[in-house]
Length: 157
Image (tube, rainbow, N blue to C red; front, side, top):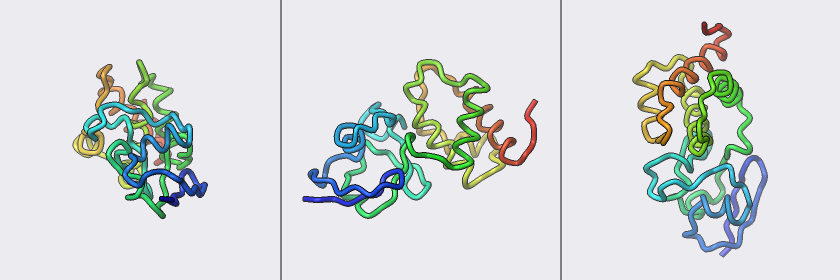
C-alpha cells in the first residue's frame, strides 16, 4: 500500500506497510537519522517530530496516521523558535551525549511557538515527556528561557 506524506516540505509517496512506525520510515526508508529511537513506547521523547508544529512521537505513530499530513523533523525545522532554541542550546552548552537533543529541540521549539513567555511550570509540562539520560534539565530550562528572551528581543544575563 502506498502512503503519501509531506516531510520537511517535500512530498513523498511511500511503499511501506501502513502500520510501519513513522520513526522507521524516517530513519530506514528516507535515511533521515536525526530523529532517534529511544524506548519505542513514546515515553522518552527521543523520537519527537512535529506535525503541523505540534510534537508527536514517531516511534508509536503509524505512517498511515500521518498520511496527507505535514511532518517536520530536526533536519527540516527552520522556524524562528527553532533557531532561537538551537542558538541557546549552543550558547549554554546544553548537550552532553546529545542523544536526546533532537527530540528536546523539537519539543522546546513547539512550546515557544505557542508560548513566548513560558513559566517553569509551562516548561516542565511541555518538556516532561523528554528524558535526558545526562540530566541536563537545568540547562534545558535555562536555554528555553534564553531562547524566549531572544525571541522577544531581550538579552538574558
